[in-house]
Image 1: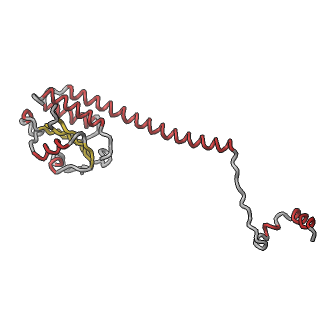
Image 2: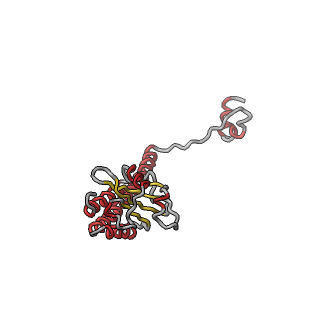
Image 3: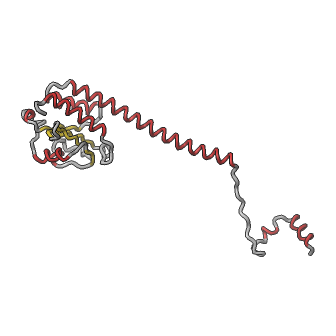
Length: 214
């Protein structure tokens, strides 16, 4: 068979080599899809746009959360400004944390001599003093010692805590604020404590006004 005849036969039977590829040791060529440059650029832009939308959504969520915390802290500051003695301070703290922050468990403990007349606030145990003295700032996490746990009802089971030390101008601790929740995600060890530190400063400032020498 002449070359021209072979080529003519293949022209008339384009699937012949595909059908007999194994007999001739041929590997079929897989079809490839070629994406035009303009279409590839559009796909890349769409992907970047989705990433930017997700990032923007996260920023908006963070901004809304921060705005909510600021409003709550403002309400707490107003409650503290109305306190005229330790009793009204403790009541104002509890009410604000319940109504504004949704926290049913809040404990204020002081070992300043002026608080000795209020057994629901005064606590002179060395373990509590050491705990507050060792804290350089607010501390969050799933654990609290037995003394702190005794300040709260047994039910519901508390799963997370925020501890805010109260210290005078020389850095000596004279009190401790503990916030507790049955939600293990409310106060986590890796959470930012910037706003908790500001809350501690507000409470400190109020106690400086109410306690002599605090």
